[in-house]
Image (tube, rainbow, N blue to C red; front, side, top):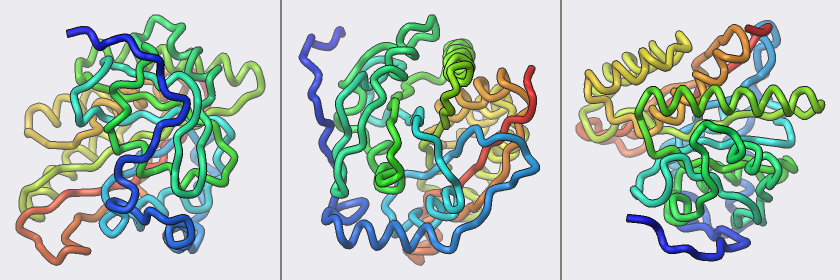
Amino acid sequence: MDQPSVRHPVVRRPVVAGQFYPGDAAPLAAQVQAFLAPAVPLRRDAGRLFGFMLPHAGYVYCGGIIGATLSGAELPKKIVILCPNHTGQGQPLGVWPDGAWLTPLGPVPVDEALAAALCATDGGYAPDVHSHLREHSIEVLLPFLHGRQVGIAPVCVGTRHPAALRAAGLALAAVLKEQEKQGVEVCVVVSSDMNHYESEQRTLEKDALALEQALAGDPDGLLRVVERENITMCGAGPLALALYAANALGRLEVELARHDTSARASGDSRRVVGYAGLRMYVNGEQ
């Protein structure tokens, strides 16, 4: 059914502040800084930074992984953020077109030109706020980006069809190339948790299968193994899209920054969620 036509709001307001992370600025800022320290330098021998995969659960479970993955990184001023669609609302590749996303630390502006550039491609991207309004998986990451003076292009990925993700990835690569020609650096952030709600042993096994494909930079292999092994990795589609894009830009290298499960915080190993942080680099050109 078509979504009703509405005027998109200028500000996207938080929906999990005070639940997944502190709702007040001072404790939130202190918590984020604690997770980011000590800084872990990025590899300088692996090529230029393409982006990251970060988890999006409550900070008590995954804040340390977000911090460890981002620590030491000097992020560019423009970031494309790819998240899964947990709500089923909106377009298959919904791009929040303009305005800002509010956090307890203040607004994070949407880069209107970058969002428009994605929607102008033939990659399936479309302006859409419905997919984002109740979706938490970008919101949780924004306090870690606030204060870095970045502009974001939020994309909610609601498809796992390889052909659609490949087309979207190639279109994203073309946008990134054009930005680079203009002297503008853009980073790609993927928001994803790993396997959900099985024992820790089974989750670690399933996570290892998915991470093997991710570390190999193989989007087709990732989508196949997630489907075949019933791995409930919510951001497999967004990660595959990013890997298609990265492979179109050059030789891709992926490193695992940290991997853990919710059992570390909860003490319950019977029903856990896996979390991983990845760093992605591209060397040379295709």
